[in-house]
Image 1 (tube, rainbow, N blue to C red):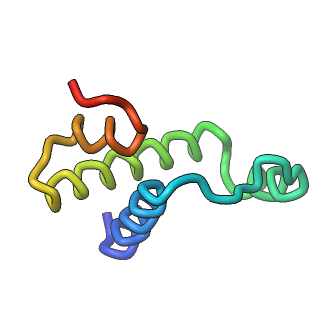
Image 2 (image 1 turned 120 degrees about the vertical axis):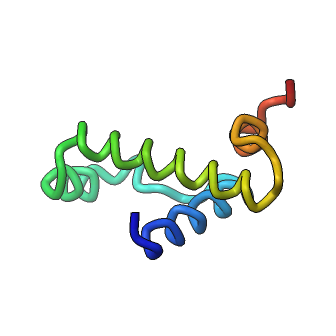
Length: 79
C-alpha cells in the first residue's frame, strides 16, 4: 500500500472519531456516477481493506489492540 493511501485512511479514521459527517447517501446522481468508476464488489472490498489497515495503524499509534480501537470507533463498550 502506498503511503498516500495509508495517510488518507488515517484521515478517514480520525474523522470517524469526531463523529458523523454529511454524506452522499441521498444523492442518487453521485451514487450512479461512482458506480460507473468501479464495481460495487470491488469498492466494498477496497473500503473494507482500507478500514482494516486504518484501524491497525491507529492501534499501533495508541498502543492498543485493533479490537479495542475498532470498538471505540464504533461507539461500542470495551470488553
